[in-house]
Image 1 (cartoon, rainbow, N blue to C red):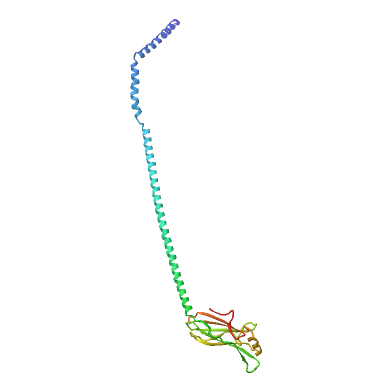
Image 2 (tube, rainbow, N blue to C red; image 1 turned 180 degrees about the horizontal axis):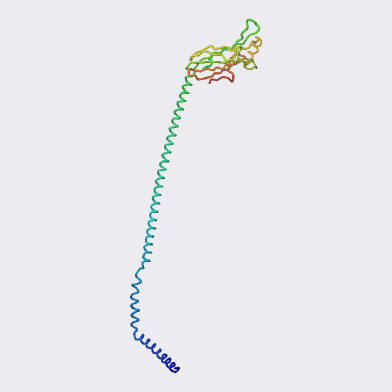
Length: 277
């Protein structure tokens, strides 16, 4: 049995190289078949590589859609920017035109207001000028009276200084209402109200250009010697009269005058207290 096994193993080992050699020879004897297969495979490969798989084609279409979408979005944004810019330019021009129109309107309104104010002022000036032109003017006449001494017939050793005054209405309209106050000053003494007066005196209306002996300023009683001393001094005797009067329209006016007697018997105006207003 052992001998038979060894023989079989030897046979197998001998046959195996032969078979390998046989296979190698077969391969070497038919080289064209392998080359033919390789050629067939190489010829079919290009056709297989040109075919686009469905997944790749879908991706390409999606990219194209995204590209056109982005491009369309860009165009819309550009158009929107152009529209906004155009609207901004138009709005600016409209605003500028409105500003110019508003400025012109304001200037016209200011000019109209200035014209109206000028017209009102002109009317007021005209009325004032007319009023001043037509108003009454009370003033002394050109020839002034001088003071005189009156002896009291009862006492005979005392008397009073009397100073008459005349006024003229030099205006174009009458004096309607008139009230006056009169004062006398003796030497260094202050002005005092005319003797016996209590408050103001009232006068009658005065027509234009009327010359009226209006009133007399009276001193307090004094002796003839005292009177003689006063007339020997410049400004020894002075009178002051203030006249308030109105015109026919109710306008109020005032005239004041002050007169002094000098030692040479000349009557002059005082330095102060002479006015018309």
